[in-house]
Each structure stands twice: as structure tokens, then as C-alpha cells.
Amino acid sequence: MNAFSHHFSFEFRTGIRNKTLLLMNYLFPLGFFFMMGAIMPSINPLFLQDLVPAMVVFAVLSATLLGIPDPLVNARENGVFRSFKINGVPSFSILIIPILTTLLHVTIVSAIITLASGLIFKAPMPVNWPLFILVFLVLALICASVAVLIGVVSPTSRATVLWSQLLFVPSMLLGGLMLPHSMLPEPALKFAQLLPASHGMNAFIGLAMGRDPAFSAWGSLIVMAASAVIAFGLALFMFSWDSRNAKRRGHPLLALLVLVPAIIGIFLF
Amino acid sequence: MGQAMIEVQNFRKTYGKFTAVEDVSFTVHTGEILGLLGPNGAGKTSILETLEGLREPNGGNIRVAGLDPATEQTKLHKVIGVQLQSAGMPESITPVEAMKFFCAYHGVKPRFDLLDRLGLQEKTRTQFYELSTGQQRRLALALAVAHEPQILFLDEPTAGLDVASRVELHKLMRDLRTNGTTIILATHDMAEAEELSDRVAILLNGKLAALGSPLQITSTGEGLSKISVNTRNGSLKQAAEFPSVQQFSAKEEYLVYYSTDISLTVSAILSFIQSQDDQVIDLRVERPSLEDRFLEITREGSAQ
Image 1 (cartoon, one colour):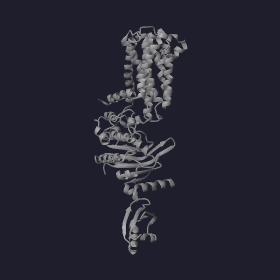
Image 2 (cartoon, chains in turn orange, yellow):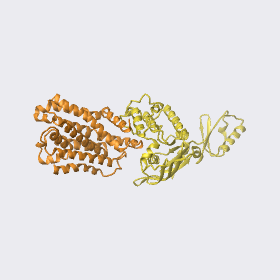
Image 3 (cartoon, each protein chain N blue to C red):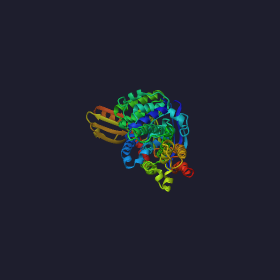
Image 4 (tube, rainbow over the protein chains, first blue to last red):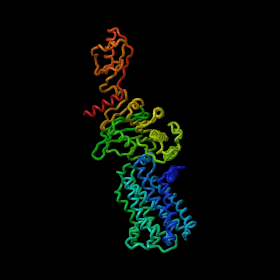
């Protein structure tokens, strides 16, 4: 095995071995899925039609926004990056490997959610599987890239939690997971279009589930893909080896550039 | 003397308005162990981290194996091995995984034998955060030398180690030196520095206060040698002062003299004992230790 595959293999096992990551990658999304699948359809029968995309989006948000940034900040603060630098571990590997391993964890969880939704809760399945997989991959990449960017710009663990929650909570409320976008007032819908979760739900519904999206489903896919590239590029550019994250290229506010595709998307789609 | 592996000329390092290191110059040659000594905040870590490529100098010229650590890091990491003061490992990594991981990035085969040699054979599957401080340091050392670097930087390598591990580490360092590895050893342990180092550099307030072999360093300064004498009849208790003696004390059966000139003092003591029809039971002469000299230098520095 080469260095990259050793690194990947170790990080993947960490995602299961570390109790916090195990919670964010598997226990939290699966527990939430089984609870929502059991309760919500009896309260709101329409929820069942969105069970698969909503719970897949939730699994992605949990594993990425809640799972990726904190370990990155902790590693930096504990001098792990310094040790990596001395031993020739490139910053690209440090940033891309958590994205890829999280993608693998969330793929496993999403497969369980999708299969269990049909078998246990009789939820409708995607009508276009290739596009379902494509939307899932693009959504996971944008969320993971943003999570890595949060880890890169956060000065401390405390700030990391704040930034992650600042994205996670509105995603849950306005992302279309609990409440369809069609029920949101226009200003709230515009704000929701800044969130990757909204674009993920919209693209799932329009491209994979065969229903009418609230805004352009292909537009959502393009916004997510462009944002993913920008987020990862910014993370790579602003990455710091310094334990205190005091020396880095660019001001932390530069990270807001990740919103540019979503802002353009509001006007175009 | 071998080829110069580390060259530091007029090195300067500042943090904002604070000058951590000022005008420090030294050279370390192939197969040499240089002990880097100094009280906390003397600038040891700033020098080490700049040599390792973790910090950029604010002045002067630095070469490590002919490379500029600030601009040639890709080449640098192949020729240096570093044991950081804080181990800096992912919490959940096991020693076996860490060995595979770092060796893979260095492009060499994993050296599991080093884990055995440093007493980690029963901890190879234990996660890093579950290892004791000493075990973490031993792992960091094994990883630092696994790719057989030309230059090794050790920052407090024996802090937290038990006696057996310390002995093994010293043996490993001697073996590495024999094989031509150049070592910079930053330590607070004066006995260790004196025992292992070919030369020591003492830093004080960011400046080089002394540089030389332990013998050269201890022979300068006040240079008070300790002369301990025990006689059968205790005649020395009635003696007047002896030449070149600066301090005097009694400890159990011994009278202890601190002298600036051993030969003058010892010959005067022996003459006095003979004149009193007394007999020497034990006479010991100890030159000043590196620790004594270090304390002397730091006292002088504080006084200034």
C-alpha cells in the first residue's frame, strides 16, 4: 500500500474507533432515521414521500458538519499537523482524506437508510437511481468540503462547534428535511437557497424522486458542485500547519466566498 | 571532523517585538551529538523548530544537510528525523499503524523492530491516547529514526522515561552516532548532555552563552573543583586555611574544600596531614560538573 492508502485506511478506521465519530457517522443518523420513520408518517403522512432524501441529507449533515471539523481542529491544536509536516504528509492529504473516508461512512449509512425506508417504512424509492447516486455524491462532497473549510478557519474547538451549528441548525429547519420548501415564505426560501442541504433536497426531489422541485434541480446540482470546488480550494489555500492557527494565508472571512455560487443561483435558478 | 551537516550563522528569531534568539552561530558535523541546553525561554525550541522547517528565521543563514529549511521542506523531511516535545500523534492511532503510516510517507519499509527495541512490543495495538507518557515518547522516537535520517532532532527525549528506557535510548543514540547520524539533543538533563554530547551549546536569553565540549565548558568559569578528604585522626579539623580554597564545608566524616587550583590545595592538605602524623583514609577530587557550570552561567546571566 502507498502512503495515501495507509492514511485513508487509518482515517477510515478512526471513523469507527473514535466514539464521537461513530456517533456522528452512524449512531446519530440511524437512530434519528428509525425514530422519524416510526413517528413522523403517523403525524404527517406526506413526510413518508421525502423520508429517503430527507434522512440521507440528515446523515450527510451529521457526518460532515458535525463529524469533520472538530477532529481537524483538535489535531492542529495537539501538534499533529506539525508532526505530519515534518514527516512529509502533504496538506492535500490531510484535507482530502477526511472527506473521502466520511464519504465512505455516509455511503454505508445512506444505503442502510434507503433500503430500510423501503423495507420497514414502505417509503417511496428513487425513480432515477443513477441521478440519486450523483446527487448524493455531490451533496456529500459539498458538505464535507465546507466542513473541512470550517475546520481550517476555526481558531478553536469552541468556535468550530459554533460555526458547525450555525450551518447545521438552519439546514434542519429550512433545508426541506422537515418542512417542504413549497411551504416556506419567499424570503425564507431565498435564505434556504444559501444552504447545501436545501440544494441537496431540491436536487433529490427533482432529479431522483421524480417530483416537482421548488427551484431548478439541475441548478442545485451545479451550485453544489461549484461550491464544493470553491470550498475545498479555499481550505487548501487557507490551511495552516501552525498549532495556534495564527499564521495562515487569507482572512477567515475569505471562507464566505463559498456562498458565491449559491447567491448567483438565487438569481439564476 | 566530518562534513558540516548543520550550519547556523547569525540566526535571529523574533515574535512580534520580542526577540527570542539573537545572533546565534554554530556548526554541527557528521556523526556529532550537540547538546542544546538552556533554561526555559532561552530559545532552544525556536532554534530547533527553525532547523526543522516549522518556523522561518527573521535573520541569518541556516543550512541543514545543505538545504534551506524554510524553502526546501520536501527535500528536508527525507533527511531529518524529529522527536517533538509533544508527541503530536492522532489520538486513535496504534504504534503499528503509526509506523506503517510514517514509513509509507518516507517511502521506506516499516521498522517494527524499533518498537520491540524501545519496549513497545506489548503495546503495538494500543491506541495512542492509552499509552503512558513514556510510551508515547518512545513511539515518537521510534518513528523519528525509522527512515534512518542523516540528522536527528531530539527535544527532551528522556523526559518521563523510566531508567531502563533511558538506558536503551542512550544506547540507541550512541549506535546512531556510530552510524554517522548527526544529533541535536535539547535537554534539561545535564548528566545526559554531559554523558552523550560531543559538544554542548548553552543558550541564555536567546544568545549563545557557551559552546564547546563538556570538558572545555566545565574547565572555564570559576572552575571550583571539589576535594573531599577523610583522615584517621581528623587532624584537618584543626587546620588553618589552605591555598586556593574558596569554600569549605563538613559532611559526615569528610571535610570538603572547593578549590580553584587542585594541585596547590591537595599538596598543601597532604603536607598538613603528614605533619600531624595523620593518615588519609579517602581523598576524592571531582571537577565541576556541567550542571555546576550551567548554573554558574545562568547566575551570571541573571546578574547582568
